[in-house]
Structure formats: C-alpha cells, structure tokens
Image (cartoon, rainbow, N blue to C red; front, side, top):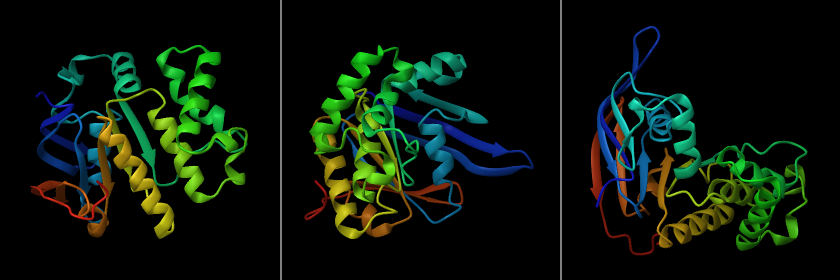
Length: 231
C-alpha cells in the first residue's frame, strides 16, 4: 500500500537559522488513526504545515498520494490540498456571523463546486454529525462541542482521504472532547486517515499509532493495541 502522505528527509529552517524540523521521514498510510505528540516547541505545528502542504520544506520532500509537491505550482498544490486534505483546528476558525451551513459550504470553495451543491452537501454533512437543527445558527449561538463538530463537517465535506486535527479537544470539556474523538474515530472506520496533533500524552496513548517529536526530530514511532481507546 502506498502512503497517503510521506515526508522524506524533510527539514524546515526559518529566517534567522531556526530549524523547527530536522531531517524527518514519515509515512502515513490510508486508513490510519494516529497521533503526533510532543511538548510545545517540539516541531508539531511545523510538521502539521508540511503534512498539510500549507508550507514547503527547506530541504527534503513531501508527497501526497505519490505526488511530489515540490514539483507542483502553488495553484496545483492548493488544488491537491482541496481534494485530499481536511483540517480541524483547536480554535475552530469559524467565521463570525456566518451560519453553520455556509461555514461548511466554504470547505468546498476551492474545489470548484457550485454554490447550490456546496450548500446541499454542507447540509447533509452537518445532519450526519447531528447538527441538522443548527444549520442556520451562527458560531456564537453554538456550544464549544457544536462548534468543533461544525469545524469537522467543514473538514470532511469534500470527502478528503486525510484529516489533520490540531489539538481538536484542547478547548473542550472532557465529555465534548470524547464526543469529538468518537466522531474522528467513526470517520476513520470509513477509511479516512486521521492524524491528531497534540501535546496530550493521554490522548495520544488512546490511538493505535503514536509518533513522538522532540526538538524537531522523531524520537519514537510505535503501534499498539488500545483496549478502551477511541476505536
């Protein structure tokens, strides 16, 4: 099986000579459920940006379903990202004053889907996540758990093969956080690769694969049976 995303000797150095990620190689396969874990400053955010094609490595390569993003133009990379990768963020990033349906429909904006179809697909996705009664509610009218479900709906409305979730439970209470992880695990069971980026070792221990970063390098990559985990 070919990787869904692959980093090969990826290094990211920022102006001033700060190296946030150093010679990292990582393969993420279709249908995986995994965590990338590490303390603040370990390189997790930089890895997220490289895996999500939001940034390019200084050296090394990033491949998405076999396509070397270094050989693609910015427009081609954006198109690849729109088709293949969904993002869930800790702070939701929902546009203030915009109804949930339209927030989710915007997840299809760069995929070239007409407005009417975007809204229909958004409604179906929100309904599937239990928010059919919240289609026209604005972010400030939703609970934290509901806002994160809207963010998940936006990430998956385009049926990506990979979802990158950055601290998806960080701003939620325990029950809402468990609900969000159950949703992500349910998506994984349909074949979507789920990568959770977190500083929380307890959350990471609940997932079948755990990659640990320290000082911009992978120090462990383990697969484990997780009785009682989110699967």
